Amino acid sequence: MKTEKTFVIIKPDGVQRSLIGEIIGRFERVGLKLVAMKMVVPTEEIVGSHYTLDPAWIKKVGEKSIKGYESKGQVPPSKDPIELGNRVLEVLKKYFTSGPVVAMVWQGAHAVPVVRKIVGGTEPLTSDVGTIRGDFVLDSYQMSDTDGRAIRNVIHASGSVDEAKNEIDLWFKKENIINYRLVQDAILYDVNLDGLLE
Image (cartoon, rainbow, N blue to C red; front, side):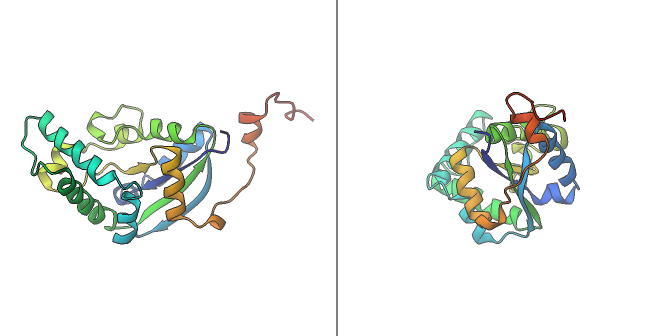
């Protein structure tokens, strides 16, 4: 549990808005440890692979899109979840390849749910104040749908431990993940705090 890892990407809009330091600071302040990081301009191939690591992703996102349109009293552009899911994937490829991203691996107790809590909900408009998306983004599904683009929500974070493992394996080689000790590890994980005084 103490060495759980999760995967995070600061998306092109987060990089362009100079939010890298702010985002890293939030994860560091909660006690997570950065064990890998790189800046890249993703290819369409890696973005496609990233979103289809779960073979059911296209259908799930299509179904979610249909429900979203219907909940707002709108007619979805298609009733076929696969067709809609593929449309979403195409706009995501365009979004992710538009500029550099910062890919990171964070480690610590409950890393996956802690990062998800700090990041906030997928739609910035409805994301809680105090979360990264709630504090730094004003985009909404309505605006992105109207513009025919991906929602600009600054950051991606793995949704489960299995998803994190698959995403880390896709974006990083094993040797790029650094195993090291921080002084704060003793404060967070030493049962008796008996190593503080000399």
